[in-house]
Figure (cartoon, each protein chain N blue to C red):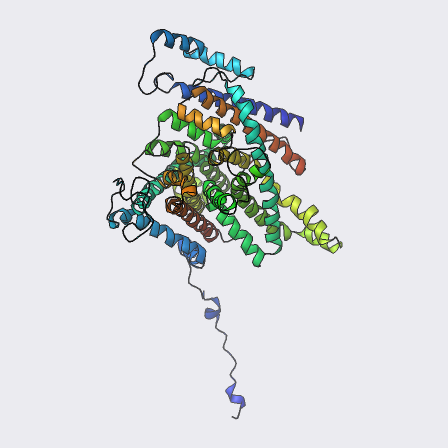
Length: 312
Length: 305
């Protein structure tokens, strides 16, 4: 177990380093200087000063070394569009908001998705099953920004139930979290249902029933525990999904989260912000996947932590 | 009626008729088609996709309007005889633009799926067939790519290469082939130890011949399902990118771009500008998803539902 965690940790660091390298050289492959906007060049002295401030006057490899050195100290560098601001400060301001939204959306998706999948499987081929599967297909098919627009249109504008735009109270979280969660709910519900149906035909379920266990115990302790394993595997990808999906949702609801800074970074071609956000989110995601892998072993004791991973 | 004994004749035993195969033998494709035909939902998906394709081809021609022509007098008009889906803030016909956008969205989806298919099959096939250390190395590489938040990578590539149709396709394919490669590799790993591959090997077949003639035809079902399901993914990602301002550039339009432009209409009441592109994105996603599900069941009857 410990050696597995260690090996997984090392590969996590290597992946992260590769991402940083890739991002760095990609961003520096963009022709032109970030200070030349709309074709207007800067005064030579000013340009030289700016280049010096952002270390752009040094050879590429030296810049790369400096960037790595900064990263090890968890410093993502200053913003190019606004020199008084730094990427770290932006993350400190924006990420807590995005994190709050993301956590609510993920929890909501997991609970609803699993509940929907379990109920559908238990009521196989009955009305509730069909309704759940319709929700699942629709949830996969409708883009989150469409859901968000519909929610705003009805819940906020027509019926005035919830506030839209800005951020602050719990009411502000409801609509964006709902819009973000619908896709993951659909995926989780389908997966849970398929697995539940399969698990419910297994012999150990029969045995549990023969022992006279209550239906609730059978479903929760025996069936569900085995049925949600694939959901756990998917969790890493879903978290990534919600994190990036949040960019669009934050734009629609005017939420002051990471998405706002990232989209502004894209529009201003603010390379250090784009780079910093990519690195930060990649690190977060890779760490989440690491946690999921370790969790997987705890939920399913059959998984051995040594030997080669085999797929197929 | 009198029932006499001589009405009853013992049935003759005929060894030939008991051995006869009553049902006609079906090829793989016939069987799959038969199962798909029984699936009403998947068929409906297929019909919708064909219709969307036809409309994308002829839609901009039959409306009598140009997709890029602006007209101040007729801006933000609701659906009418003249403008079937209404007009946008520049007086451009939404009907024409929706089908023009369909061309771009469908093109992006199909191209991205095709490129994923070629790279994925090649990479996965080689990795799975060769096995051993090369397989290990190739899979390590995929594991690393898999750890990347793929939309961020796509955005990064788009920022570096500048927005545009070609960029979108390249950026989407750069990350999209990974899932395909993994699936193919799994299939090939499973099949390469089977007896018919061994037989082919003993007869001196070359590796590439075995991959082409034995392994790929057996994986074709899964490949088709995967391609079908990756089309809506690409369309979805394109809409997402357009929404962040990284899509095709004006006056060109894709569904994502149009939905983004129409977003402000939630409050102004010009609902048609958001509704039509959003509706057709959702319809396309739905059609491809149900068709993909149907194909999965058709090609693999054992897969539980």
